Amino acid sequence: IGAGVILFLSWRKPRWAAVTAVILLVIALSRYEPNNPLATLRYPYFNTWFFALAPELVSIIDTPYHEILYRLIPFLSAVFISWLFQKDLSRQDFLLKFSWGMAVATIPTILYYSSITYLEMPAVMLMTIVCLRIEPLVCNDTSAIKQDVGWYALILLGFIKETTLPFILMFLAYRSFYLLLEYFKTRDNDNKAIKNNEPIKKNHFLKKLTGEFTVVAATLIPILYYIILRNTFSPSRGFSLHFENLLHPLDYLVISQSFIEEFGLFIFLFLGGCYLLLKDRKILKPAFYIFLVIGYALFYMLDEERYIGYSRFNLFCLPPILAGSYLFIRNTIQKSKPAAYGLVVLVLISSILLSPIQRDGR
Image (spheres, one colour):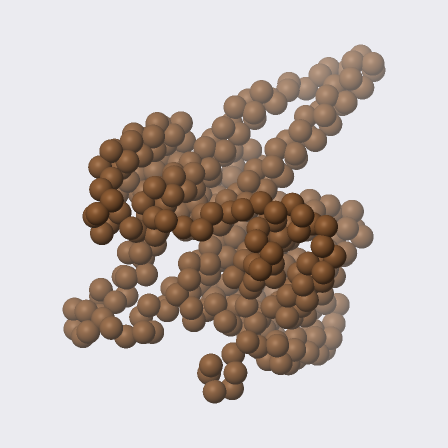
């Protein structure tokens, strides 16, 4: 109930969300009982109940102890990501769209984690929505982005898992950087107008700056609340900084190899999509995608060395890789459908060869 209240207020009244979160946090901590089974909840939001929904419904007519019921959420998340990727690729060629949807579904990491009861797939699904909608989410003011589906995906991220925090922080940093660029651009235009004795346009920078509090509060409050609750109610492995890892050349080779093995040819499609945008001087999207991939790679590289290249962590690099790949594939379809068909066949074959799942299902 508390999570629902925070979610609603983060959406409608961010200033009240902060106050409400503090009150609920104080109540939760004051009622903390170490010997209570509820005190060992690993995921303090609705994740546990979300995954238990299907078994609970089935228990009305049958036993809930069917393994597939507990794997529905990651599977449906993978299906949605595949559908979202292909839905606007080609309006006339259904077979081509379906083929690219299957290409996404068979990416080694997606195929593997679509059947594992981890919480990464719902988070990756929401991050993919944000990456595909990044331009309006970064450029528009607070009143406009509240009408965008990517905004709701961004808010929900904080309720899924604590490892989405780097994504949220990088989004806020990127949006802040864009806002500063707009400010300096407006100031330069005003100076030119003064020199030319032209009227100065009204500057709404302070109003925009005030509105940014809404964005920061709505995105950060849920996940910070989550982290405090989890660290209190559940013992978990903390993040440990190892800056010396940055000095190990072998670690960079491990990351590069893991990207190829886990994402297949999509890593090269991603680079191609970024190149096409940069070539056309469209910097906003590729810069954000590259920022995310490098940011997450370095973030986990600073953790314990044994986790470098771990597919579960690399999974968070998938949304920007998919978004960048989408741009390259759409461009290929517009120029040559036969080339797009040949490319999707090549991608499918490579993904099957790289698949971590053996032929006997193990």
